[in-house]
View 1 (cartoon, helix red, strand yellow):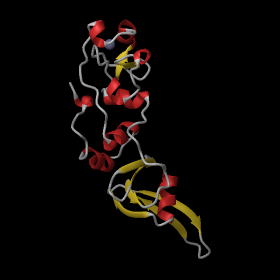
View 2 (cartoon, protein in one colour):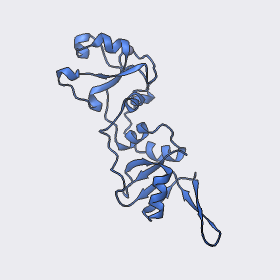
View 3 (cartoon, protein in one colour):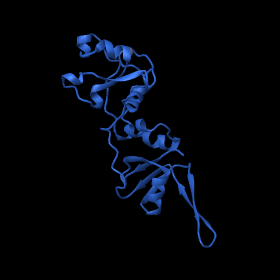
Length: 184
Ligand SMILES: [Zn+2]
């Protein structure tokens, strides 16, 4: 099954839960509201009356409590970064998969450039190698798009590979609109 999108009671996404973790939230009565038409039935054990217990999981749930640390836009891996940049080198525009792309620090790390969303872009190996320890200005290279920090809804989208339509609908409405991944 795909993951369940967990929100806090204000509707801010905090985590992608496994079916088991979501089931735990249901059995602890922590789920206060839920969204989505698709559902996933989890079958439990058989009770003394011979009836099988089951749980119906919705794709989006809002829960009380902090069973998991809140989601953060600060933490990201290369896959999230490349997805933000539409799996394109932000210098030459070439498309590539996770193996073909690299994380380029616009201001190089060796010169104090931070490892933050605003200072990193997807770059093909060739461009990254050519740019080396220089800023884009010094290397006479220009960026195809301004790298941006995703909001928490976008970060959740970037973090998850398989997203159900119900989940996408919830997240997409709250995107900032600064989407590089829809660029031509
Ligand atoms: Zn390139």
